[in-house]
Length: 193
Length: 251
Picture 1 (tube, chains in turn green, yellow):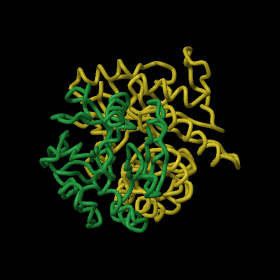
Picture 2 (cartoon, chains in turn cyan, orange):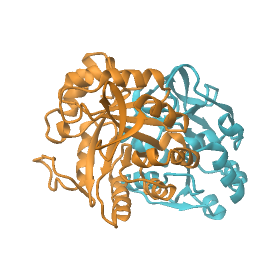
Picture 3 (tube, one colour):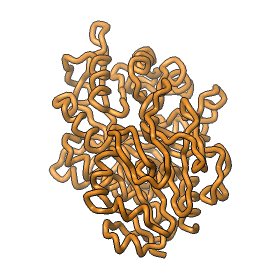
Picture 4 (cartoon, one colour):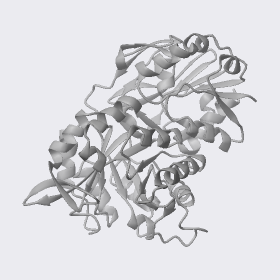
């Protein structure tokens, strides 16, 4: 299985590479469109600020490649948010895979949310073998509201989306690569999807 | 519900865990990677590696260590100690650290916090603050609490938050090493005045101290070193007791 992690200079990608290695697979890092298009599975990571990350994607032309991919694609954290149509962070237009507008937490909670929170209303093969209310690791200031694409929710001041799914595209707000054995199960489900 | 975090802190010198670690079941108690895995299995929510080496190779040694930790450990970890530039942070994050913590360098050059949060995002920038009370006022100190500054703890904390820090790690030098409990009055004030998470550090001696810092101290996370290293408190027992006190924890 050819697993490609999109490498566009957006933060911590070693952790996801190592997590895949611990599951017994090898992933390669690439920003080359041909390599990404020919992969069996694509992981779209992201840590950092939305508008500068989108700038990097546009500069490399990856912004037009990613929405046309046909194989399973998993966006993680900022990667998930950039798969949405818009994010309040830097008033940034995203890739538009999910018709969702990402907002900033503003309901009297500490921002960023940092730590372990529970996922529920799990409704995707991504969560096979994962029980309701399991803990995952999250670190973010912006969130996707609940929409028809929502396949997992979390509560932090408000109920919001912690996972999205549409066709071959998946997104998780949490970091499966940092979410202990639960995260590894979710990552393995994606690799087996 | 977002849970309160329990964070063991490992002091690192030249890529090895510094003294004060007493694990009979470890092959090599000096190996930070093995210790990190053990804490991860024991239910730690996060780890902090604090580098105290002073050699010329320290940057490379630390970057190598971060890579080795990231390879094996599936929970988040923060790296601190001597971080003073965008380049320092870049290599650590690239190698798999989730967050970095800056302390003295931020006091000397506050603009560094803006630079780091602008480039890497607030979520991975922790600002560590060491302070102790002088004539009743909480004063920020440098060099592990040895050198007083002119900064007031609460004013400095507000400034670093405004400059883009994602989180504050507050160590009370008055409480550190006493095992008499955390500085909960100051912690509660920080938590009320700031809108970013606050990690309590310094003073942990008993399980009750953790209960107190999460209730009275309103802390979002609590960090400790020796009580975990010497197995005076098992993380599983600690979390069970927090749960019994209706404090949300990941069990």
